[in-house]
Image (cartoon, rainbow, N blue to C red; front, side, top):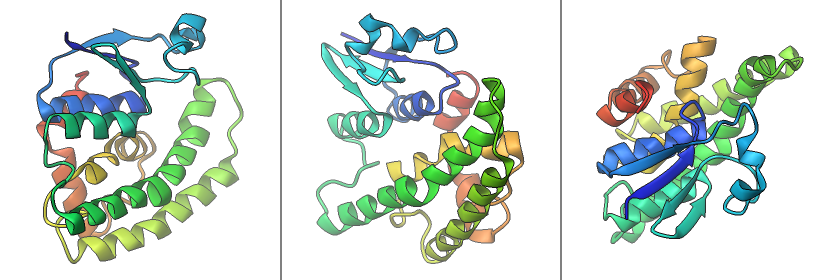
Length: 209
């Protein structure tokens, strides 16, 4: 039975899962959830995603939500080197890199996008001062990225992993929509960002998957 992905194409978290499906060349059925009208809060939907968010997958009856968990599941199920299982030290470095994305990148990139993109789209008043604070913190965090990427090609070593790819949805959103330059100004980050954004999987997602 083909994998079913329930989500919204313009949702960054849905894009994270779409990206992995493209990386793995997985066949899937996309089930669109109209979050603008609140379909994700429908009781039938919330039986599978109790927080009323997108996305979730149905893999032959196995239901899973949270985009990073879905990505890890699919990569390990299909034996992709995007998670370096079989080498404890490489796996530990991957986990370190994945933690960096979730703790030192996502909260600030998401928060910045929330204030400058999502709130205005919902007719809410953004907090511009807080947005600038988030942007400034993210820029400082990226100094650590510059140091890491000055020593190796990717965040976990010399091979690309999910930890790198997890940055793409929000990184691309703030770069393209808000002209954020933190991913293009510093030489090592810029080299890394150019590399991962050029992947055919991300190009496909960016073109509507």
